[in-house]
Length: 433
Ligand SMILES: NC(=O)c1ccc[n+]([C@@H]2O[C@H](COP(=O)([O-])OP(=O)(O)OC[C@H]3O[C@@H](n4cnc5c(N)ncnc54)[C@H](O)[C@@H]3O)[C@@H](O)[C@H]2O)c1
Image (tube, rainbow, N blue to C red; front, top):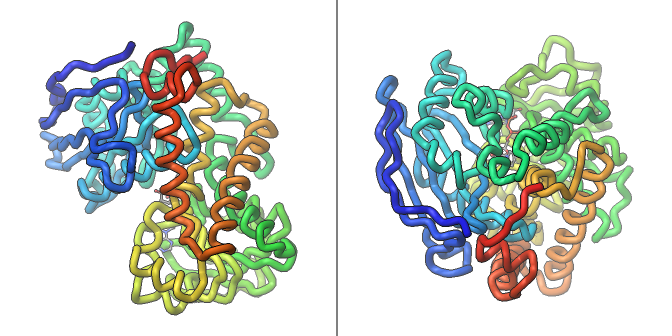
């Protein structure tokens, strides 16, 4: 059985505070993820730049928690805590045998010192990264960068805490890397597009539940980076018309729809589109215009708190699909619900990347993209159909139904002896092949 002692976290180049006891499974305050207290909050101060870094472990399951590390100027403990809770909800919704965590660093990712700050943060968090916290890319921290830092620290790859449990870690690492870097159509890698593919499947599942014709369904997407770009690609491939996309520089609108692969060719490393090479017939609008252009589905895939009480009344879409975390404020969501516009919550719609990473780690999908796409399509569409079923019948907000599902999954995992779910909850034997 995996347990952790109550041990201080070494400071690396900075100082970390607050270490907690960590039994194999820990959900402080019960299985209701919405209200339970996170099991651990850590604050780190970088001795070189003064940057603050945060780790919140919301829940440990099988002695493990999963969640990316973000870097942005202004990142706060509260933000990281909300995101860790969201991760706990994602892993529970998709019945994964791990809990939720998140890392965040308050620093500009474009600063040339960013990689060294990230390295010092990871060094300070090392006891967690070594044994319990599986991290990955997030806002401002691409996967290749965090992997480079793990490599520098001799930890191999950011999934180290899980991979090190395998009987043959080198073999497992090779298998996982093969999955992450499997090429997919469009010249991208499976690990880069899978989250966006999941968002697209949430949209397609909703269209299916309502009986919409895909070829006449229109979509507006805020953000055209990893998540927004992937979603746009697979929605376009499925026949939907992507009529508006926004990046940090503004909204691009083309009522007859974009040739998405052609548009993605114009992106730079930060997910911004080169305006000097835009195709014919593209209107350039204000950045937030993407939220109110005429489209059946709105996909916020950039910033948190994109849809607020100030702009919720301008949303014309019939459905909002949250690719970004906390894309809709609770007040805005209530305003949308009053207009009968449902929101597929972040911890369902954008959980594809996290769920898939664990299926890959557990050997349930491989480097053949078709296996991964099939699994994610099936799992995402069935959940969306269930959530929308309750909305259509009784107008139950999708988020409420999804929270219920997440808590029910965790309770079932804790209660069923001998099942995979039960080993997940006891932490006895999570097998990483
Ligand atoms: N990458 C993942 O695996 C993943 C998984 C789950 C959730 N998310 C969430 O999805 C969101 C986007 O993440 P990403 O990895 O795609 O980021 P990214 O950095 O790859 O892309 C961000 C995109 O948003 C645009 N953007 C930034 N500010 C904007 C603004 N104010 N208005 C319009 N566009 C703006 C950027 O120009 C870029 O196109 C974040 O909230 C992230 O936490 C990401």
